[in-house]
Amino acid sequence: MNLTNNQNLNMLSELDSLALMINMSDYPLNKKESAAYKQAVLACQKQLESDGCAHLPNFIREDKIELIREQSENVSHLAHYHENKVTPYATEGNPELGENHPVNRYQQFSNGFVAKDLLPEQMIIKQLYRNTIFQEFIAECLGKDKIYEYADPIAGLVINAMPENTSLPWHYDTNEFIVSLMTRRPEEGGEFQYSPGLRQPGNENYSEVQNILDGDLTKVKSLTLNTGDLQMFKGRFSMHRVASCKGTRLCALFGYAEKPGMIGKIKRTKDVYGRVTEAHIKAEQETREDGLAG
Ligand SMILES: O=C(O)CCC(=O)C(=O)O
Ligand SMILES: [Fe+2]
Image 1 (tube, rainbow, N blue to C red):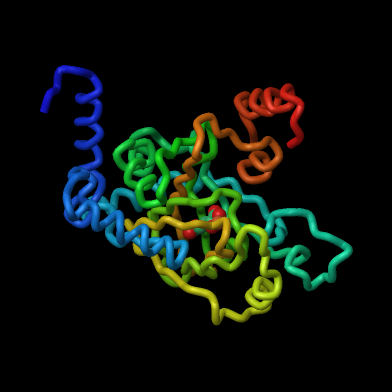
Image 2: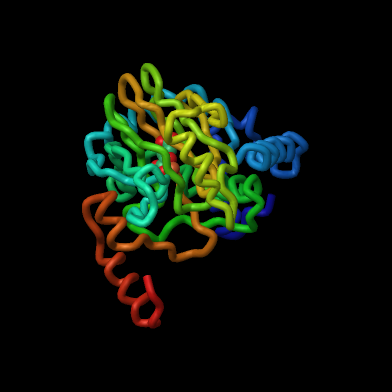
């Protein structure tokens, strides 16, 4: 290998760092040209196509499992909680439709999020989130040319903190996809439940949504992640929730954008994290200056 320029040195250190974090025998991200790598990507693509969800068990090296659990436990007290009631769409209800209509079904929401700027740089989840070899793998699995870290100082990489008796009810995500890494499997429960492809562009499929909200789980799949498992999920089309758990559940959520410069809106950021930064204020001013709504 020609190591005469910085790019190669950077690549090497990224590979070295990746090899210290992930299970390269099952997920050979160090051998992109190998049949095993192509097979791992294909397996994810197939799962995503059929189910909107890919499960990568034992993604983290076995000898790092305790460490990722410990690192996430160490910051879990920094989670911001906001008790709230939300609909599956996180929008205001519509009084013209009945109170049983999905757009009017408010549910209790009480989990917390630890923001990105509160996660120490040396944390495995932060190193992994930023690793470009890992990002390329995720992009390939999702059939994207390239994905970008958020420019948002506090969102993009967060830990979903769910102590006992908290809830993350049925919802769709605003993001097309999310990557999750379980850092603390709870003692019991905390399954990820989802209904694959429940809605499509142009078809909200309200009747099926209503069935699920009414407790019919026949079209719902359930996935239990162990600590160290990775998941890719297309949350914009598959309604999902996290079942209640016994013991704390901590799950790192890696958000990537399809364009650089992604910064969240002030209102939502304040709701979820309890604060905003200068970057949020500046980004929103710039949006307004171009005369567009929202
Ligand atoms: O914690 C999880 O597994 C998923 C969380 C989730 O769905 C969300 O934050 O939108
Ligand atoms: Fe979600």
